[in-house]
Length: 369
Image 1 (cartoon, rainbow, N blue to C red):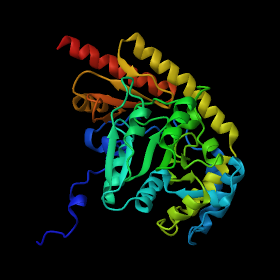
Image 2 (spheres, rainbow, N blue to C red; image 1 turned 30 degrees about the vertical axis):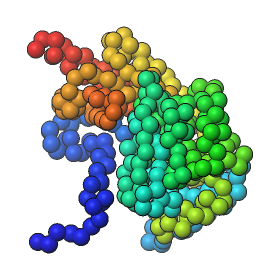
Image 3 (cartoon, rainbow, N blue to C red; image 1 turned 135 degrees about the horizontal axis):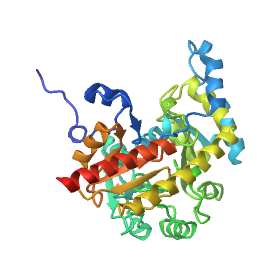
Image 4 (cartoon, rainbow, N blue to C red; image 1 turned 45 degrees about the vertical axis):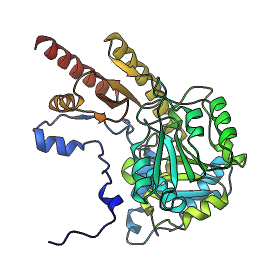
């Protein structure tokens, strides 16, 4: 068979590996009672208002969705106090990251980001033959913003900042962001990926929306996958100047967000009670999970999100399988400074206790080995 004729940079691409589905583990290991703590999903489920909106819209799915997503974009614009032309929709914020790469990067153009941040950044950049430029994380697994500013060159088109950061759970402050933006100037579009911002309780956490409104060269990314519980519908959005949004719209696929996702997101955006309940649950259970890890003297990176990066100090691939045998799915991570680490989502209280019980079993097993 003739070898497929594709560019070498495509051949060298890695493939994004998502958290394992419950059904896959059930088939492979024969385990039936499974807790999934791998993908940072809302353990309380989707917004009830969103579920009702989807049910009401089901009879219309034979029609194509509104390609511009007008109703949802209008609701987002009103919520955030921006113009309609400053809002773009995507199939999750990941699709917008990929659109940004297509819109801003030509062969060899650079995108700058932290070593220990979202794996999809590098994948999106390399898909368009861009150059990924990384700066090492700080000792606490945070963004080294001065180092990132120094990494910007004349070829830099995008700076991708995850705040809070996935997979580390860390964040940087308003003061740190202001210093970075002053240093970066208008040399590149700064993308503030704030997929987890609703979970953050720290008063010095910066809402990137203020930077968009101030006219800075910034795009803010948000998602309905996390606190609103709509991960399966794939819907997110970006906020930036009308000029930036217009450029990104040039590479957006037609009908890139479904009609069901759009109506669900409009309803979820108005479900303040659900968002607040989900936030309060996460704050309570995140504290419980981190306190229990401290009590067991298990190393982890303090988090402001709905997950914790745990450092196991032993082969995480082997532990990944052992956790699954005990009905718990976690998410191994890798890369510089993340050897033998795994990301553990905050679940319900019962799910968090299942993780801790499995952890205790494995500790006892290894102690007796």
